[in-house]
Each structure stands twice: as C-alpha cells, then as structure tokens.
Image 1 (cartoon, rainbow, N blue to C red):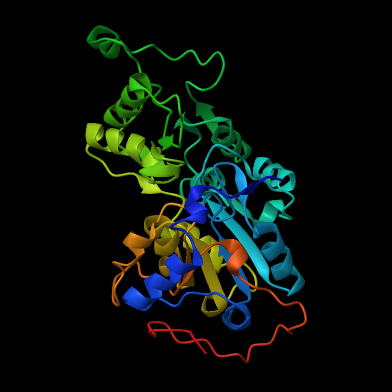
Image 2 (image 1 turned 180 degrees about the vertical axis):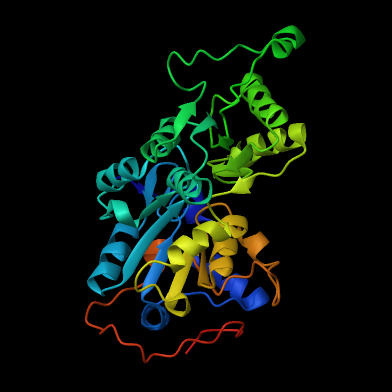
Amino acid sequence: PHVHSSPLMEADRTVDAALSIERAVGIPCIVGKELSEAVLSRYDTFVFDCDGVLWYAGELIKGTAEVLAGLRRRGKRLLFITNNSTRTREMYAKKFEKLSIEAHVEELYPSSYCAASYLRTKLPHVRKVFVIGREGLIEELERVGVEVVSYTKEGHGLPEIDSEESFMSVTIDSDIGAVVCGWDLSFDYKRMAYASLCMQKNPSCVFVATNLDPADRLPGRMIPGNGAAVASIERAVGRRAVVAGKPSNFLAEIIRSLPDVDASRTCMVGDRLDTDIAFGKQAGFDTLLTLTGTTCPDTAKKLVDGHPLRPTFTLPYMGALAIDDSESDGRTTPVAPKGAPSARL
C-alpha cells in the first residue's frame, strides 16, 4: 500500500513538534524504545481512530501496519472506531485488507454500526426511519430490521422540495419514528426540509446523529463534516440530536462492556480532541494524541494541565511507537501517572 509522506508529516507533524508540546505544557511525548515499552507495558487494549491516525487522505501513514502487527504479536487487543458512517463493518474490513492491515469485523466500530446499535437497543419500538446518509449507514440499519426511507435509495418516491408550495404539499409518513443523519456529500435542502418535517409532524420522532464532527482535514483545506449538516437540522427544528458515535457515552458503554476490556488498562489513540480524546475520557481510558490528522501542534500547546481535553500522551505518528518483539508483555514497567509533567524515565 501507499505510505503517506505529505508535508504535514515532514514539517510540523514531526518528533520535534511533539517534543515542543511536551516542553510547552508537559504532555509526555512517546518517542524511542524505552518510552514506547513503558506504554506497551501499561495497556492491554488499544482503541484506534482511523482517518488521521492509521491513514491520511486514503494513504497509509508511515509505520502503521508494522506497529499494529507488532501490537498483535505482543498479545494486545485492538479495536478500531471511526465516525465515518459511509461504510459498514464489512466494507471497512475490506478497506483494512486492501491496506494490508489485519482487522476483524468484530473489532470495527464505524458510526453507521453504532447508529444501528442505538436504534436496536435504545429505540426497539422504532421500525421505520428517515435517513440522510450513504449506503453503508442504510445497510447497517436494515440489518437490524429497520425500514429505511431515504433520498439515497433508488426509486425512493420522496418529494422534491424546491419551493414553498412544494414544501407545503409534503405529506410525512406517520410511521417514521426517527431521523438518522450521517455524512452525505449529497446533503441538500430537500433532505434538511424532509427531516425537519418528520420531527415537526411527529413530536416523538427521535433525531439521531452518527457523529458531530464539524469538519475534517484534507491536504490544504477542511471539508465540512456531518456536524455541519446536523447543526442545520437542529436549528430548523429547535432540537438537539442524540449522538451514536464518538464521543457518546452510548459507544463508551459498548466498548467498556466488551469481555476483558479493563478501562484502567485501555488507551484511546486519536488525532481529534473533540471526538477521540473526549471519547477516551468519557470511557475512562487514558488517551494518546497523534499529530498526523486534525489537531495541530499549536492547538496542542494550549492544553495546559487541567484542560478537559488534555491527552495523557502525544505520539508524532504511528510509526514512532517502537515495538521490540524481544520484550515480554509484562506489567511491571512504570509509566508516569496521569497529569505528570513527563514520562521520561
């Protein structure tokens, strides 16, 4: 697979940048064999975000495949959580395979799956939903027995809404018990209008968002995320959405309830503060911020002691985690406690 080596990695996302964060606000930077081994000894489970951590702009970040393979050899449990709702678990498994990364379907938690799980467990009475989103989200919802109404589906039969007259003529299906909004590059006025009408005409209709990421980083620019679409609907109906993906407590409960997951020995690895690091803290996990995605070093330098989104550690990029297979998977190597100014041993 192609390995990502963009200017983001070569310039401000370097080891020097991570060390400068440690000097500025005391967040330990994990570089080198000794510090890497200390982290490996402390945790049994690693929960990874995907985009901006494992890959960037569709290309694998340097060292990612080797580090993940090394973690498995050391007997670590790996889980992968993404707020991208466009794929099913199986679709993501194929993406991992294409990138030569071992990942099993049961280890994958895209927000499409999370939204379907939320409806199945929290809203079992809801049998029909209006969906803004792509095929992956629709497929996950249909798997749990929910009937999907969506402009994305061929032959959807939904009305065009392009004038006040057409808006006034819309009749809403009274059986729609929830609106589910996931990332959709086709998001437009008719989708927003129909979603708002579902909730106007049925006050008990639940508004579920796969995630609230406002925007995502691409080379040289930020692409609007699902949070922007959700916010427009929230403003239209005066109601807040329930979030199924990161950083929701719903997802935290799912991960914490998995067999053999000990929150005190679990580390969340991500590139975003408002989703990944916030999720880790919500779940009671330690957190490791990578510098290959959304969060830039200047932002990280503002995370003073006591900041609610301050991570436990920083990591310049995945490949900086040095794994020595000759070391045992022991639990004796100490790591500086949470809030300590440095993990340097």
